[in-house]
Every structure is written in structure tokens, then in C-alpha cells.
Length: 321
Image (cartoon, rainbow, N blue to C red; front, side, top):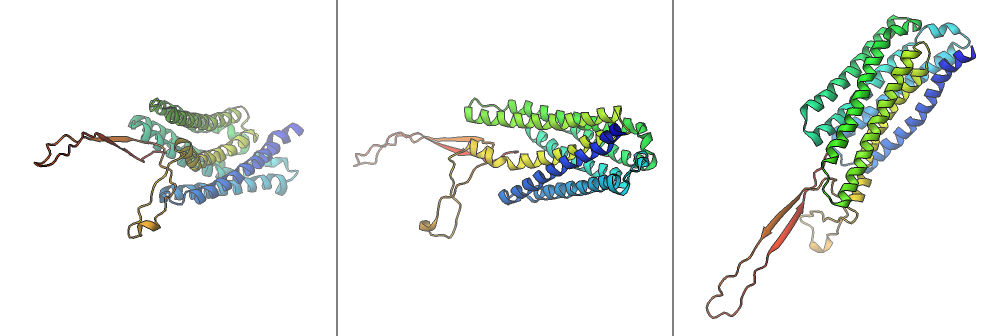
């Protein structure tokens, strides 16, 4: 009985505690995002808000599920034969979080690669992940917990698709970023940082998804897989928030002394102040050269003009990150 409690209620409780800790990180990162990036476009702001709401709802459902088995059905071993509604529904919230995050990263892959087949491959895997999550939820309501082994193929295919998508995203971003090396140390160091982050993020969520598949395939009738599955959604949300919040620190590394002047039309020149502004991460340099040639001086003049080549460098401030 002790081993059964450890692998069922104990695993679910540990998963809930760790999920709650990661949810605290989500709240902090969401606050930092809205404070530090008020000028981001509305799509990004809405995406962060939706992810936070889904993550909140998921934690609430997980708490209800654990409360139900540990308090409402205390000392009732028959609860192991059934699955509560909250335990079933939370799967869809995690799946929707995964879909949004993978679409976000698929867009990044498209920006750096312009490879429609690679991007479509990632999107198809993301949709399979989400769709089979819904199939699992429907199947959970129709079967007893003791018969969850019948749903192993659903979980294996769905989360296997998520793992492949996540690892494909990480490897793709690393590959295409590595092709952007310029030979300039500062830029190459920045690209190396982005590559390490992309690879670690993709493989972290991919490994957790594989652990869910493995534990559910071996032990479908306990809650060990649940602990890993609950962590998966939290890692998805925090990976996106970390990517968004890291932009300022990356810009500071790339352009530590950049200064620009705001265009203050209608304000006296004496009232204009320099404003520190970091350009975006990607810099395309346009070089425009102008050359002045000697022109014969007008009659009666002894002034001779000298040829003065000049170069104007104009940085672009577009970036996919």
C-alpha cells in the first residue's frame, strides 16, 4: 500500500508542488514583460496574457484533482480506479499551451529560414499534439482509470509529436543562426548565446515529453506520468516568457553604448535631450559613398577644391527576435 501511495498520490502531490513553484516564476516573468516591453505589438501582449490565463486555469484544475483524491476521497482506494473530471480536462489546457508556444517558435523558424516545408512540418506536429490531447480527454471520460492502458497510443503519438517538434525547433534555430555568423566577435558571441538558448529550450521540453510517454507507457495506472506532464506546460510558458524578456539583456551585450536622438519636431533645439535607445538585435549595414571631384575654379579665383570621399553608414534596426 505504501508503494502504491508513493506512486499515485505522492507523485501527484510532488507534481503539484513543483508546478506551483514554476507558476510563481510565470507570474514574475509576466510582470517583468509588461513592465519592460510596453511598446510590443498587441499580438505578443495578448499571447502572454492568454498563456498566463491558461497556465492559471491549469494549476487550478491540478489543485482540484489533488484535493479530490487526497481530501474528498481520503482512505478510499477505489478512487484509483476512476479519473476525476478535473484530471481529464487539465490535459486540454496543457495541450493548448503547447500549441501556442510551438506556433510561436515555428514563426521564429520561418523568419530565420524562410523554409515553408520545415515550418509546415513543425505546425503539423503541433496540431497532432493538440488534437490527440483532445482525443485523450474524451477517452478518459469513457474509460476507467484501470483501463488507461488502452490510451497509451494516444499519449505516445501526441507527446511524441510534441517532442519531435520541440527538438526540430531547437536544431533548426541553431543551424540557421550559425549560418548568420559574420566574423565580428561581438555579433558571433550574441549568435552563440541565441543558439545555446534555442537548443536548451527545445531539448528540455522534448525530454520532458519523452519522460511522460515513457512513464505512461510503463505505468499507465498511477500518477508518475502526471507529475512530468504538469511540468511540461509550465516549461512551455516560461520558455516563451524567458525568450521575450531576454531581448533587452541581449541588446545591451550587442550595443552597450548605443545612443539615438528622438525626433522631436516642434521642440526648440535647446530643449532636445539625447535618449539612450538600444537598437534591435539584427543589424544590416548599408554603405553609401559619395565622391567630390575637382572642379576648375571660376575666373579670377585661386581656390582649389580637393577631392573628398565620404562614407555614410546607416544601420537597420529590424530583427526577428
